[in-house]
Amino acid sequence: MSSIVIVLFDGFAFGMLLFVLSVGLSVTLGLMNFINLAHGAFGMLGGYAAVTAMRLLGFPFLLALPTAFLAAALLSIVLERTLFRRLYGAPELNQVLLTIGMVFVAAAIATYLFGTVQQVIILPSWLRGSVEIAGMRFGVYRIFLIGIALIVTALLVFGLERTRLGAQIRAAVDNQRVAKGLGLDVEKIFGITFALGSGLAGLGGALAVEIVGLDPSFGFHFLVYVLIVVSVGGLGSITGSFVGAALLGIFDVAGKYFWPEIGSFLIYLLLVAILFVRPLGLFGKR
Image (cartoon, rainbow, N blue to C red):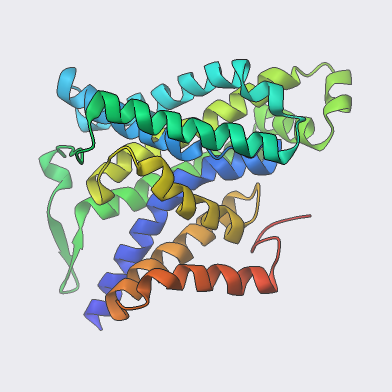
């Protein structure tokens, strides 16, 4: 029984990591209708930004996390203004080709600058080891991941549903022409939304280094997981991304633990089963 609880806990913690990585894509794809397959590259950028800040600048881990967020968000602002903005009304294929091409470029740059070796990050002592609860030991860093994901969820839900900016974002998405007629700067709102989504990817990349490592293939590897989370949860739904990521993490870890021969395929079976019943995802809206 204790092993089942620990596996479920580890799976949920991994799911929360996937949530932080993927919720930004759910926001940009669901609210802005822009297919940004370069989302994983922003996660990789956040990971390398955190590693570099800690190694070269001596930043503590907790300061490296907002550094990763800002690095990804600032670069996304530049790219959104120079490249992505031109494709908002373009066919989906054009968006896919540009953004997936940027993942290849990002991987090549990362290989040139950092090599192909796995990067490591030094956690503070209070985030290492485990704590014992009810006779079972739980990793401190995984508890920290869950806490971060819950904070991000609360801030996003509050920001999109309870603030003026959130109302402006929803208005700009529902009808750009009317929003412009009301005096809203739709381009600025979309730029802020894109920066927020990319920054969250950067934060997720920094958090992922300790769990899964970091190398130039990060953007490709986690793009699959991120797309599954968004598909299962439903576009534009924070709650959907949270539930979808939790289910994916638990199925992935439990499958690899209890059925190692087929564990890697369970997440795809989960995806097919959910989309067969709910084609728009668990919380998706047409």
